[in-house]
Length: 131
Image (cartoon, rainbow, N blue to C red; front, side, top):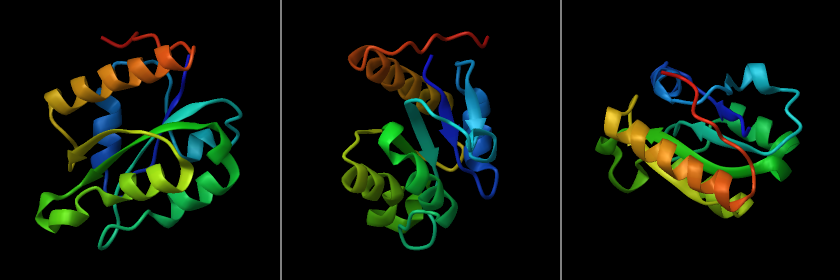
């Protein structure tokens, strides 16, 4: 089963992650010893930057990264959730979804559907288990 790893500063990404209908969802701190393929959810800092904590994690674990999603605020226009763009380019992975703040039910559904596609396309299991 593919783990979902998230990085959250203000709690928005954490709230989004808590809504994801999968069993293996971990904060960056809980996933430090990860040694298997994973999907990353992060936030965007400043004017479209990747958070330092996310960068540090990816320095050690990028080879296992399958896909990325990001939170942002639409008031930043073209910089909305831009960390996902940068990570996708830097690590050659797809962007699963971009969502505003802690996301909506629809955002969670889109993310879950896209995560299942990644799992299927990479021959990994991602079983929904949360109710």
